[in-house]
Amino acid sequence: MRRVSLWMQMSLDGYTEGPNGEFDWPIVNKELHTYFVDELRAMGAFLYGRKVYDGMVAFWPTADTDPSSTALQAEYARVWKPMPKIVFSRTLKHVEWNTTVVGENIMETDHEAETPTRRGPRTVRRCRHRIDLHAARLDR
Figure 1 (cartoon, rainbow, N blue to C red):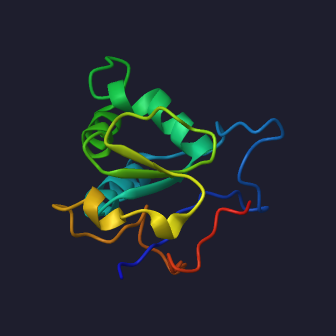
Figure 2: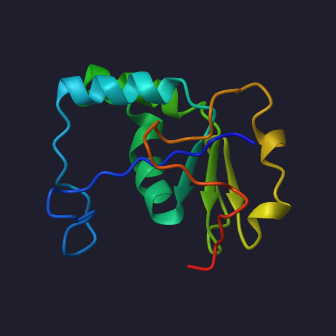
């Protein structure tokens, strides 16, 4: 079984979003963005919940051709677009960009078949937090 690692951005006081659910507060400088791109390039797939997937798909598919994007944003877009993505959602019905939706039962989905040529860990980023897919549930 492959590893799953958690990547989560959080403020120093423990918040993961603004008061209205917005995610416009992180400051990602060149050094941090370079680290993200370097780490994520080696991954085997990205795992998302529906809300994060919605935010990612609203920006990254065109970031490499958008003249207002930085060079680092364009580079990450080129990593993000072909990367296999798995979205955990009971409500999402239509997906693009090499994405699979897992609904009610994570154990009935053949994830290995989704990424036959990618052998990296199924992670968003390497870190100390590990999750066993057999223990993951979609109850919440």
